[in-house]
Length: 348
Picture 1 (spheres, helix red, strand yellow):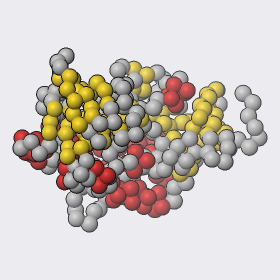
Picture 2 (cartoon, helix red, strand yellow):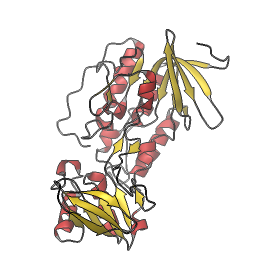
Picture 3 (cartoon, helix red, strand yellow):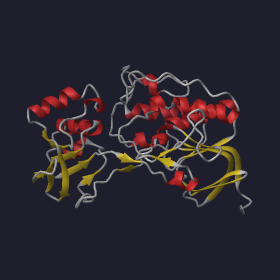
Picture 4 (cartoon, one colour):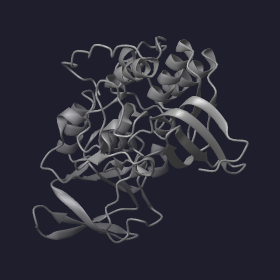
């Protein structure tokens, strides 16, 4: 392999600056491990596209990282804004050098390790490392319905601001937490809200416990219209055509705007570029649970990236902290940490 003379070399490269990527960077710095850290966007990017003032499912203690307490003014669960501020504080406190807006475009490996090609705004760059960690998350792209009209201008896969829908007919497709929270917030902001969900009833375990009674009462009263079980088959500028499941008749629901909140998919391009073995319907990376090392020697995965495209979510911030300890132990030659006891009541 021929490399240009300006290739920067380091021991470890970490890709991804979400909570677990940042926690790993802190741990590497404390251990004196030389590393470089990259993200295609900003730190905590996935969290940044949460709607304003969204509160986490998990308690602050379980999503705190790097041994730094996460305190909120009202002692309540952290909001999106509070957690992003917390991540910025961690980066500043530990003087982390995160090279944001520098996406990875190529990963090559040989007997010396890895050559990583990035493409920041200034142009292509190359880096060499002995070990590589991918902490790239699992919710990169919205899941598509692949029906006529799902790309129309009034259709979105992201709920950003309830005020946008004041006084309009809004149809939400989906029935898990994000859809329920959006439905409630838009209803309270003056939207005329309808919901389409493919199950007979909302899945209580997937919805924040403080939201379930409210959404149930509003649906029972007809103030939020619920069309269960249905699925959209076409979207037009004026309405959405729903089909009653299983295989029933179709009918139209008026809609000025449509929110398709049906989940997200992982972009596993980097896994494939690196030659990581993927497994199962979720296309999750195969790795050694004691070390987080994949089938490619010295290439590790961490954080929610290990879950692939999750349908039923089982991997969250709160149960990924152990990944950091496992990777650091493997990189430094220490014994793997003792596996933590399973969370009896996961909060996410």
